[in-house]
Length: 299
Image (cartoon, rainbow, N blue to C red; front, side):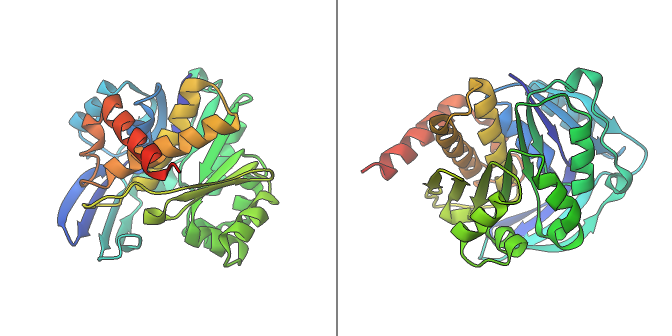
């Protein structure tokens, strides 16, 4: 079962206490796609400029990612420049250049419109709503968002929440959206807005998955070396949705496994800059770390 992702492709310049990269391949759709492609075929919808290299496109194609929904147009690719200090949970944005993303309007190819598993990556909620209008009865719709849209496009975001199955956001965004300091209460408030489940990412402290009838708390994998947390959340989502699509099963036990697979893949992502860890990641690597998480949390 394939997965459709609509999101950004970017050239990122990132500095952390452990190094720096310039114009490295990034973007929510890229991280998600590379993670999800480990489990299933991915169909990608996004836009890039003429400065987006053929080598980057070839890399994505070699991972089996379908790029028929990718637009390459005149102009420059979306660029994000950011910095992390020793608190790697907090990114400091230095510069954001929307470039070709500024007038991006996702067009879902006809052959993508029956895809059953959908991930709406972190883009304008009006665009996320527009994408849903182009789809035919998806089985699972997962959406991401961020503080910028909560501040600037809250009404559109509230409309979106009524139409999706799962929303993914971090702890700060959950509190911002609900004005609720307690994450359990924040999750319950978000559920009242429409989605069937809420996943709250807590960085190095793991994640929560909450529904009206169930609660699941997952730890993060304990790492000794973290170089760059950029893309961790989208890698998490890619592992989560990709695993579910590959098993075609949305029951609670599979949802919990999917959370741990997402956690596992995200733990690899942060061990190097950009997509360096993801491009050579194997199922065997993932299974070993998945079993390790199971072992250290079992009692």
